[in-house]
Length: 259
View: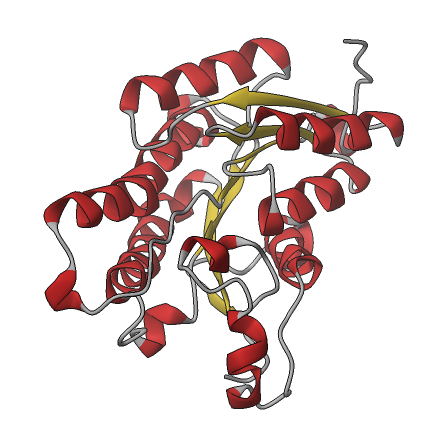
């Protein structure tokens, strides 16, 4: 694959890893990031065709992108993902922890340990592991040049998602706390850590919960009276990654139409 070298002012190449980047918010973020001058790595779990389609779109527009398979809940696969990016694109300067899973709507009393393990392993442990690898490369304490991390949380962290997916909501509550703690831990090392909390957004994750049309059902509860788009969330993510947000760290930015 022919690659185009993309450089920032000061000759630091901007390299972004987006986990779960083959669809929805992740794919929209990948496209926008490439337009903004990032060399992008999309990680995906199973849907190689979808990830490759996003990469092809970026390459045709003159950007630089690759897609790599990785299960972020597996430590060895996360380590391998970052090592492959080191070799293919260079040192990571930005990370978007977007990979997440949602399972069928049910009450807590119906959930088994297997489901809880799957949701928390991907949504929480995966974000920790990816952030760990990013900090090891970005931190000035480790000889890095700094960077930015954006965690994709959810308005569910504030609302609890009763009768639907309290486990998913709890995992995103953990992401909020993780964002606050890590932001303070690495603030003096040149790394900013923030989160976006999307509300009801038109993506296919709702099908995983058993209700593909959920956004249309609940949008009446949104003050703006509509669901959001993946591109609207991507715009917020790119702002938090950018120098325009240079004094923002530990922020939880709601992109939820006022809900």
